[in-house]
Length: 408
Image (cartoon, rainbow, N blue to C red; front, side, top):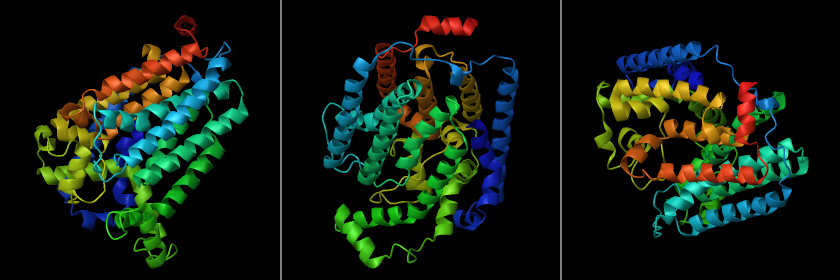
């Protein structure tokens, strides 16, 4: 993740050169951005080589579920998906699930936040716990059922959020888990590529559908779909063609250079100071990117997102970027070396710690915590604690066994 994040500083121009004029970036901004990329790669190299002799535990060959816990697994499994779909439906009918923002939904006792973070983090995290359990127990049918239900939930979430990326984002959990378990082979690579192509195909239509829903589509999904079918042929009449959409999907993998350059360009090259105070009106760096830098109006349901170093640069300047690069690299080692105690006591929690770690740095999450929602960490820590306790109940590996593995 570190390498692909940093390499974006250097590759995005070659991948998507037509965007240079559209973005209005000058050579100085791009040069500073690439220099930041070089610095972060240097930090990553220093941390990596300094730890190169540390022995890492081969996770894919370890057993984490030695005891039988099937009596607890099935009721917990059913309860998970009932709550997942129920929370999604409640979020939909109260108007807090849409990308349009608050959506008019108001719930007491921070229930809106609890529903949202449960859907975004909680349920996918617990899904990985069951996924790993069924995989190790060689319960193939339950493994397939788990993946299919999770895909169905992701599609439902994409429907109620009108989000182009929620399905792909949710699949990252499974991909990280496959990497840790040594299951990321040729078939998975082909499937991943297929999903990218499908995503490129539907990308413009989701954009158009979202605009119709909050514009001329009558304010409902049915009205927007009707408008789309009647006035925009699903094949060939969209303003954005397939190749352009494919570029739009691919460039997300090299967005670091683009977004950082845009922030530097807007800040007037003031990369040594904090701009945290500018975010108070918007909540996080992603929305500042959307409303101020990209100029997207308040009534338009869109988020331009944020990247790792653009977020850090905006919050604390170049010094914070380098600190973030160090933390990013060193925590990667700690996760892989299983040195975070109960948070990495098995592959499932190791996977979700890695995912949450990714989203913390690459989703405007830091600025959101600093400005508005400091209790988010407590919420996620509670999820991790629940996962750990559930894994113990289901017969997961004990810390004593893990200490024996480390000694070995």
